[in-house]
Amino acid sequence: MIQKSAPTSWISYAQLACLAAATALLAGCAGMGGSGGNYHTTAYAPVNPNDVTVKVSLRTQNVYVEEGDHLLMGTPTCVGKTGYPTPTGHFAVTDKIQDKRSSEYGYWTNGSETHPGTAGQSRGPGWHYVGYPMAYWVEFTPGFGFHEGPIWPYPRSHGCLHLHETAVLKFWKLVHIGTPVEVAESLPEDSKYHVERPTDYADPDPAPSLMISNGWFTKPRDSELIAQPTGTTPTASTSSTPSGGSM
Image: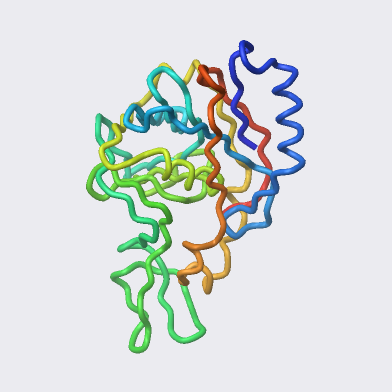
């Protein structure tokens, strides 16, 4: 459960502890087809959506969504592994596709039979390729984007930035075409905020029949953006109590 703390000027540490405990009991969030769990992501609605920026630290594998100096959402990610680096620099959101699929990695299917594979390696006549689901794709440079995926504790993606299923739709709602994105080896936010990670990354993949269906993109996901208290904006660190359920 990712739980964002706030300045003691509007939520005391005692209140926050009670809130975190209550949320842990009430928020049962299934992973990406896994065994389920209580992992939760808290995100705040911006006052001015045009002031939202996104920052990514490769060192900590964290994503920070900010409005000015205020943290709206802190969430873990999984960055590119050796040989598939996530590009660094200053970018902007260029595209958003809810039901995007990979053009390189996915499944070959023939009737009721489905097997993992790559697009260029057909299994023969009667088989057709269906790309791996990259739900709620947010592109920031050609071929690279944020999308739903397992949050491994070490770099393991093919260069894209994975978001947990409890965060991906909230992230999608927070950003728009043109939102600035900075990807750096490290960031000042790394020492300012603490974002713990889910433990559901090694859970088995869902059934291939779900992964190749449109139902993958329409399954329920938490999308709530919390309204900020009048006259204040959350600024303090994030913390979490992770539990299972993902790819």
